[in-house]
Each structure stands twice: as C-alpha cells, then as structure tokens.
Amino acid sequence: KASRILRADASHSTFASSSTPSSSPRRLRPTSTRIPAREPAFQWRVLETKKKKRGRGRRENTGDFLVTSAGDEKTVWNAGDGGEFESETISKNIRLLTRERLTKLVSELQLEESASGLGRETAVDSAAETTTTTSGALTQKQVRKKLARALRVLESGLVERGTEARLVLLAACCGEHLLLIGPPGTAKSEVARRLGSIVSSDAMFFQRVLTRFSVPEELFGPLSLQMLEQDVYRRNTAGYLPEAEVAFIDEVFKANSAVLNALLMILNEKRFDNGNEQVSVPLVCLVGASNELPSDPELQALYDRFLFRKMVNPVSDYGIQQLLSSGGVEGAREDADADPDGDDGDEEEDLDLQSTWLEELNASAQSSVRVPGRVIDILARLRSHLMEECEPPIYISDRRLLKCINMLKMCAFTNGRSQVSEFDMLLLKHVCWSSPEEQGKVDDWIIDQLISQTETKQLRYLLLGVFTRCCKSMNSNSGEGSGSAGSVSGSDVASDVENLVEILTNKFASMQEQMYTLNHLVSDNIWLCEEEATAVAGQLQKPLESSIKQVEALLIDALTIESSFKEQIPLYVVADLLPDYWSDFIRKGDIEDVKPLGLKPLP
Image (cartoon, rainbow, N blue to C red; front, top):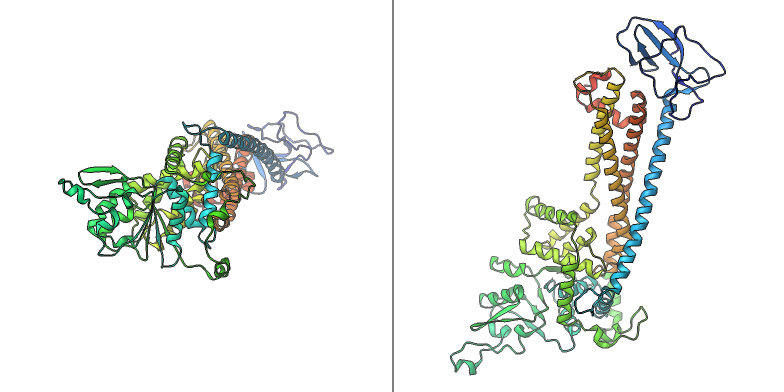
C-alpha cells in the first residue's frame, strides 16, 4: 500500500537540483526504475510504484500526497523515514529565499537613501552659499534668517496668532493678499500694522474702515482742484491707498460699487486708473478684515482676490492666562532683535523687507523651484473633488489654482528646497475654501491623499492578478494545463512578476522618503507654527507607518511569488505559502482559470 504522506529528503536544504538521488541511511528501491516525465525541484526517491494505465505524463495533487504519473506507471514520491514533510521543507526554503532577496533590496534602498540624503544636505549647503539672484546679494540662508526674524516681530506679544503671522508674511512674499474673518478685538489690525513696520522703516501704511456710505475719496484721495481748473480729472493720491505698500481695510465687504471696481484692479493688477492715466501701485500686501462672509454675489469677485483666508477666533481658555500675563503687545520689534541663534551683529536694516527685496525673492522662487507631477495631479484632483463631490460644490477659479502653484514654489524656496514637496500642500487649507465649514473638508482630503491607502489596495489587486497568471503558468508547465486555451507564457509571467516587484520596491522607497520628509521637513517648515506642525505630524505619522507596513507586506508576497515561480514548486505548496491569495483565486477567480487545477470553485 502506498504511503499517504509525501516527505522530502531532510538532507537537502536548497533548491539545487541534481540527477543523482539523495542518500539516506535506509535505502528503499522502487519496483520500477521508470523516471517521471518532469523532475521536481527537489530530488525525490521512489517508495513504491503501481502499474496503472495512464495517458501522458502528468502530476496529480490528491490532497495528502503527490502522485506523479508517467506513461502507464503511477509513482508515489517519498523521501523515507525521518524526512521532513514536503510542503514544510519547500515553504521553509522559499521563505529563506524571500528573506534574502528582501534583505538585499532593503540594503540597496538604504544605500540609495544615504546617498540621496547626503545629496540633499550638500544641495542645501551649496544653495545656502550660492547666490540665487542676478544681483548676487540674496541666498537661501539669508532669506530664511531674515524671514525668521520677521516672524519673531509679528508674533512677539501675541497669543495663538502664529498661523496669522505666517500667513500675512507669506502673502507679502508672494505679492498676494490676506483676508481675516472674525469678531472684533482679535488682533487683526495689529498683525497688519506689524507687517507694515517690517516691510521698510519708511513704508507707507494705509488703514481705513469701510461702511455702506464710504466714498472713493476715502480710499483713493480727493480730486485735485488745481487739475480740475485745467479740465483734467485727477486725484491727489498722496497718503492714500494708491501709494501705500501695506494696507489694512476693515469691513472690506461693505464696499459699494463706486469703490469696488477700482479696488479690484488694485488688488489683482496692482494698477490704478487716475483720470486718463493708469499708474502702477506699490502695494505689497493688503490685509482685509470682516466680521462676516460676503452674501452679495457682486462681492464674490472681491472675495476671490484674497488668496489666503483665515478664521480668527478669540484666545482659548488655555491661552487666556498667557495673554493676561503678557502685559500687552508693545515693544515687539525690540524683543525680536535678540537672535536666538546667537548672531548679534546684524544691522537693523536686515530686518526690513523692502518691496524690491520681496519682488526679487518672488522672481527667484518662481524661476528656480520645480513642481513635480504628483503635486500637480493632487491639485487637479482637489479641484475636481471640491466641485463634483462636495455638497454644495466648492468653486475654485483658474486664477486661484495658478496662484496656488506660485505659493507652493515660494514655500519650497524659503525652506531651502528646489522642488515642491507634497507636504507643502498642507497650506492649501488656507486657500481652497469658500466658507469656514469647508476648510475642514479640504484639510481632511489633503491629508488622505498624503497617506492614501487607495494605491495600496490597487497594488494588492494587481498582485492577485499576477498570482493568478503564475498559477496558470505553473500548472501548464507541470503538464496538466498544456495546450489549454488559458495557458500563459512563462516568460511573460516572469516579466510581470519582475515589474511588479520593481513597482512595489519603488513605492516602498517613496513612502520611506515620505516618512523622512514628515520627520525632518514638517517640523522645520517655516510656514507651520509649532502647534500646527505637531498636529500635522500626529495626524500623519501613524497612518503613514501603517501604509508602509502594508506595502512592505505586499513586497514580501511579491518576492514569494517570484521565488515560487522561479523554482516551479508544486501549487499546493504555493497555496500553503500564500493562503489569502490562493483563497481569493479559488473563490473569486474565473471558473475557466480554476478548472484546469482540478478544483471546484465554491458557489
């Protein structure tokens, strides 16, 4: 009676095949010396053969043991007493090969990461020492240092206004405008006045409060009586908005139609129609404030002119004690003169962000920073998501999208990088919303994209498809599926497996890079305050670590499939190595793919 347990020779621990049967203390001889049509990867010794008429040589998986048929003889393979169970031995060696391959890949990735990390540090150091403008007076190191000092001026004495301070400075660097929405007494005008004090010592700061009855003369200056005598319509703009570098307009949405048209041109084109002449406006940044959002459709154009939008809330209960004990906000500029880095030799003018310096900074950022395709793809999908999947739809104009790209370039440049990072897009939560409740939707969607597991699920489906092709090819090679309509070319399958391993390896390396970026760039981002950076890191770190583990598990599965296919191991061992994929293949696979394996799919 044939043994029902198939065993592999315990003396073989690798997949090196040989034509010489393995030795054993107890040698058993078969009743026939007939050799199977195809040798398995392991060397088998024949325990017993049974005469039976069969067709062409083939292998049968009977469940508990393997039967190889050749001609009219049926042979049960066994390695003798004391050997390990066949599937356990093959599985052990496949896992060993997989670990070796994974270790090699990880080592290569670590070497590449070390080289790229060194390259990043070298590039940053080089950029810090190399001039980035045609004038030869501006470097990224100087830019970051000057902006850090400006932020200390904007934040000094203020409580829970770190985000507002950074947004108003970023708006000035980009040549854009900021809208602050919140109740009175929340330091909205103070932030604007401080920006005016650091743009330059002699910067023209303009401030007005609009009402429904405000007239153009309040913003643009009175008519020149002297010019009227000469039949020329001209305004005297000295000391008014057309000659201001920084402006603060409170209750900006109460502007009437007489004020609105001229204000729109100043905000967007930075030009002003003064009579029959159109003059340039030196405006660096206009800070608008309002207690409520605009409800009149005529004001939507004005609302769209403000690239940055921020809800300003009163100080929380946690920060109220700090506010009361601070004793006011005076002396902010003097407090900021003490450089925490220990550089006391800077002159006072180094703090002034003159309009020419800001224009030069903006031009350098736009010309020297590259935007990768993935960032553009995320931004395009964000617009589609807001307009098609949100209820009510959130409209994002083409002009706002272009300005978002310019803002991302400035963010990367001022952080010492030559390429926009995906994490720079966290600032879009201050740009791509129309009502306060929509800001959370934008923030959540962006974070989901940074840690999205959609690609991981797609890779798993792709891996299942490759697994199916491997099973069909291995079954065809064993002789059972040869000539069938569903047979698959072994070379094509091998190429598919190799490509999938490469894709998963690149994905794993990319996510490791994301983790590096999260740990090293989010906390050091000059445009994220400490509280915001800590919150972002807390939101991203655990999900990103989970995604990395999932991709690593997929990579291990792909390497297992690759090793199994190269060694052409029996299919029932493949099922033991990858039970989840095998189960999905049998339960959900096409019946035409499952039939050749001699298995009946579940209903």
